[in-house]
Image: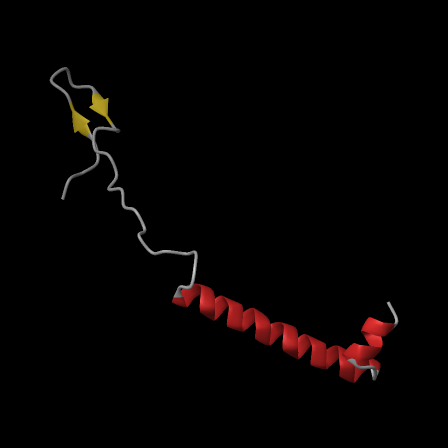
Length: 69
């Protein structure tokens, strides 16, 4: 394993002699990917449960809310 620094022939310390290993994440995050489908499903479930909670707490349904805006 390399130590991350070197000493040159004049005895000077060089802390930046070794560059960190770079990598690129090749996973696609747009379009019809499994990640996008899971996120969309989870957000839909949160919205549906929120709507049911509001209807139970206010004792009015979605149609009542839409007609009284």
